[in-house]
Picture (tube, rainbow, N blue to C red):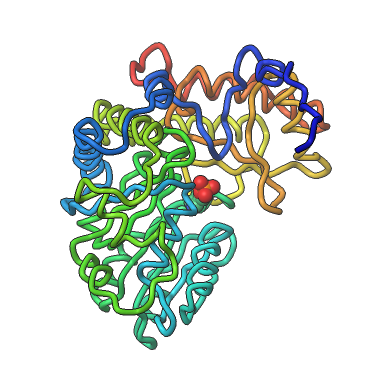
Length: 402
Ligand SMILES: *Cc1c(COP(=O)(O)O)cnc(C)c1O
């Protein structure tokens, strides 16, 4: 045993700022006080209290996912763990998978399918565009796919698959099971799981739902359920096996010790979505994101994606020639205490519009910080025009929802 004690005089507040930085990046997003409080509570993972919580999470999720399916399963893990649960329960050696790839996260689904032994065909969508239903149909016609994977919002390059409903309905008609990644979009824009014939919807905690990172939700359709339950292929994963996970999520039994605090936080996040109603929440996100987009343009910057397939949940902004994105982010963080995101290799910065990020006061602060920091990095910026455009678009005094 080593006799060297680590230094103990290192309280967290020697690292954390007095006032938290404003999280305006592509996730995690700020959480409400109710979510934060719930996350500080630990209860028994089995028993009557937990059973009631799970039942309510299921009922609220059915509304948020727009499904009548009872098969809502939680995962202790990031959005990627939910992606992996979806893939590993539907893809095994020999299964044919069509992966629609718009960027980094949809590419991750394809990689997971490959790792699980799937025979993967990539539809590599040109950068900055939404997937074309005609191209998908041509692929469905000439192949015998078992599973299709697609993302609703590709957070990495800020593309929205605007024809998602048509693609999933078509895949259903061809007898192909669909997996939709809605990590950044669930509850920020319409997704109708049942009406659009989606078989699996994946979400994470820390993005669209505005809960904490580390606990994710996944919804399975009644249509896909027998495929999972009656599977005969070997299942390499124990934690991610839905047939085991349902012992907890559907049968009030033990699988592994559930992340109780994160589930309580999710309960509060879902409840806030239900209180606001999906209609009002979608409208708020859309109005705030469009206001931000018009203000960014009025300031003299360009948006990365054309309006048709532009994602509202995460806005991608081109870096002007010669401007160092890392420096812009650092200035925003150091001077203005606002954090936004860089990107995975693209010359853009990204601002999130999920949950509490879509509030007028957060937008004013973020736009100002972005404009000033871009200016310090050498960009030519008309900040007053940008702020005026934001004020006009949000119409704060006349608009109670902002
Ligand atoms: C963030 C994100 C993920 C991955 O979520 P993690 O919690 O980081 O694992 C997957 N898909 C999309 C669309 C995302 O935005």
